[in-house]
Image (cartoon, rainbow, N blue to C red; front, side, top):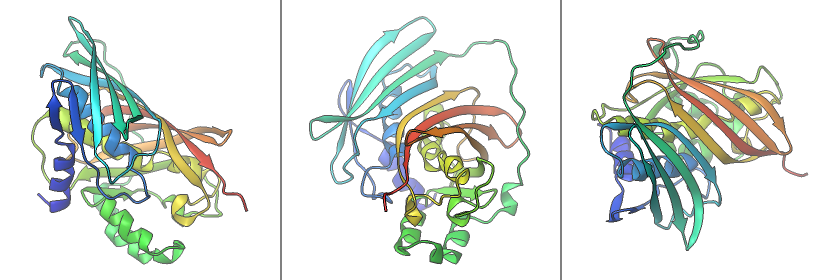
Length: 291
């Protein structure tokens, strides 16, 4: 296992303070605030540790309330809302400096047989034919006003092999195109068989690129090139079928709307053999800086 992945797993291994209270730390972020995917994944860890092991996460709904301070610990307070015969509901509030920064509601379910259908997996190039980020980003450092962004991006994503199927937003500045983006991702190393761990790692990655499709529709490169100011507002995920985050997953993302300084991204995550594993929706602040 590569050191960055081990560090990420350590980050998700929260310290239990009391039965319903956990404490987590943060890692250096690309921007001077805690990465939203980290807070969401840690909150789901906290929720999952209060649930019987035979119940698996099937959905989460979250709001990002305040920017997190990467230099301070985060306390996760779990509220055991309901324990039913089939479903378990948990609410988690992440607190820093005495104030809530994030709110999560998550639902867990025992396995059941039921109706089965899914939307087919879209066409996408094979992940092995696509270059990894450590090959792509250094070649295009000149696109970024601050070249140090490249090193920070690579460090922040070092635990995950993330490969764009088409040009990412920072290579599409000034060229609006269809508001759709595809990336393949998997962890850089094999993981244990704990289903909660795989769900939490997918949650972590899901916040990295979901609003790219909003930027592509307008030929914007994003915060990294300085033509957009953005932040996640809310995030929802539905986990349909089992998957492994250490095997290739296709993250197919699109944007149906942007207005009022906000952009909406919707996405589906497919396993390599075409099973629809996860649906994702996120809205974020997408503002054009004033001149």
